[in-house]
Length: 190
Length: 122
Image (cartoon, rainbow over all chains, first blue to last red; front, side, top):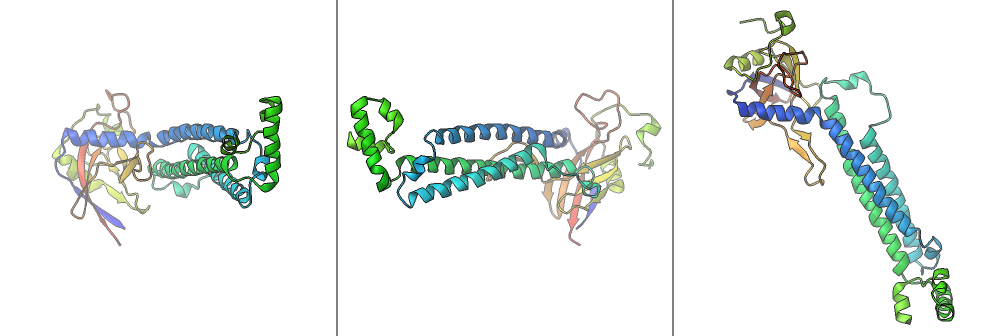
């Protein structure tokens, strides 16, 4: 592609203001992207840590108490959450810090455009990182919900019944030792 | 017509003044070249018609402002206005040389003008 340059129409002060605003945005573009990526990274890390911590309260033995094939479904959900979360973390780190590699001098051309190209790549990484983080959060929430409220396997029913007997015999300490797998089950039995 | 490539350093730096002149656009059109080496990212390069200092001016379609959803990319449209067969680009001097009385955060010598750019596929 080639181009030609010709005189434009007469300029007025408003044109100058528009051009200065454009230049101001362009000069601060890359630092603004990096700052936004840092905030998003920290915020999403907090959200994911909260959800992951919440899901680990019950321990993974709960998955084994699920009826087949729901235990496998939960496993797949957790695997998907791990992949989405890991990918999102790498993308957010890339958006925050840039790629950990040298840049060939030949790739700096055209001069004056390098920061914009990097900002554009960082924005893409940030958008994908946000999407991956939200997907990770959704998958984790689905896995936790399915673990709590999914159908129990037949092998765990006697344990749940025994837990209810313990509740009647010794009060709430039995609930802490062997909680009912499902809140709905608990309500139904009560 | 004065030599457009005599820098303000050779003439003594002009003070910063936000000013335009019909001759600026004609002078810039005669001396600026459009670097299209990176497809989609043209850059104007040449001498400011007022201070004669070398300057670069990327011609972009958008610039990052804030992050938003994919439907709205969070970019701000660049100032160029599309016209038949090209675009009109409002420009300011972006030289990196010192100019007395330049406000903090400003750049160049204060001159502004506009150019009509035409892009042609080879």
